Length: 390
Image: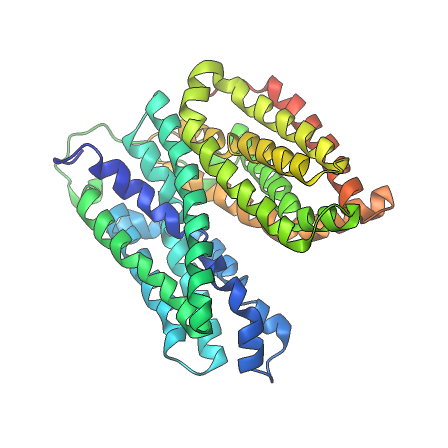
């Protein structure tokens, strides 16, 4: 631990979570950029928000060996610095392909510290403190989303280039992490270090058993959240009780609910421990099922809030549990496995929903949400059989 204020370390560790979903900050610029680059296919312009996920996947896997060589703190600082440079590059370049390349580089920077956002919490905290901090991490992530859309909505009034100024937020995050995170040097750098050696496990060893189950659970959970995100506006419109703008309000409520749930996670975990996983999944399933039958905008808002609160309990439990399963020294690899699961879940959601639509004979939002809720309830029921990590 470092000397200084007690909030210094947790503030540093949590601050990098603000940047984890920052690739979406420029989503609102797509129409303006389509007008600026009329010869570029719309699908290529839309890829400005999706191509970072490809490099995130690559560099999440590479981040562990890089961190072993450079140390976690230096790796995170390099990642944040790359996000700053790559994020700001579109404000000065005129080539679309350079902008696209900068977005790939942005994902590389995020990938370098994505796993550390979880594994460093597991390294410095244990037991209930770890669970509480994981909940706060989810809350800060949601807060970052809210800030991102508020700031980008303000900046877009000045033009599409100005929206990329959002990435200036990486400067205070860089300073805070540099100031608050401990300097970590590995055993290879300190051969005289007498601390107990850690058992390094291979990727194959970690993928056996419970950790693989956790990766699948986080994959399914992300698919569920993504389903709500892509279907909620259509649900409101097809049911005829609201406008497309009301769907945006529902998504904002979902983000606020995730933030509140993350803040309360530690207290809820103290009360029900391992039951937090099945209870969170089953409550979300009930909320989604009721949502599919909603005929009222206010009921939809309430059910969206319930779904957001309950699903926000799943991620912190899985990330904290994965660190306990992997053991000391393997936290980053364990977190990387779950992050890969998250990104795969986001990527395959449209295809999974298409397949589900064919299976039930309808691609309308209400029956899709009802079918998803049944699958989610079944998964939640099965998690009652999981024991708490030793």
